[in-house]
Image (cartoon, rainbow, N blue to C red; front, top):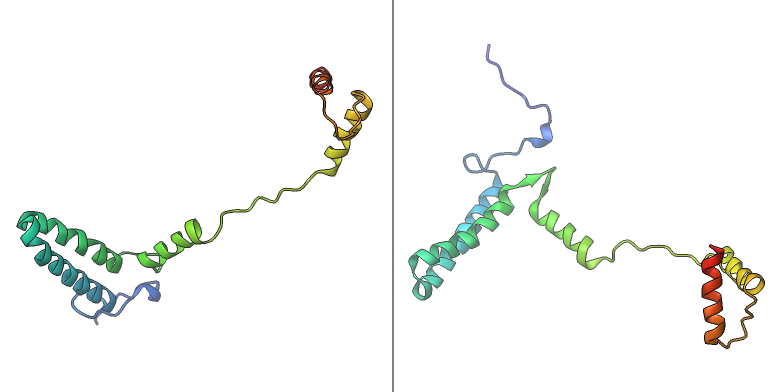
Length: 139
């Protein structure tokens, strides 16, 4: 009697399209090869054959990588799109800042009772110096 191994997670099984590659991988490999060869023949007259080979690899490999790499059922373009959304399009974490009225009242009472400074809208250098000196002594 023959035995067939069944994987534990059926979601990881993808139907094969061409050899060991599924349909998405086959299309991205063909697209990468096509753009790479096009880039090779367009750049060969200008930079030479050996440098044009680097152009071919530079165009082909990222496209093929996007089709072959998958992590947690997410492809590279999904991860790049999410990264751009988080870093550039949407604002970062907004810090919620409140004005602490208790601290404000404490400072006002401290200024009024301890330092004897009345807030009349005028600021003089003498009261500022006195306030700074007394605050250092108080703390």
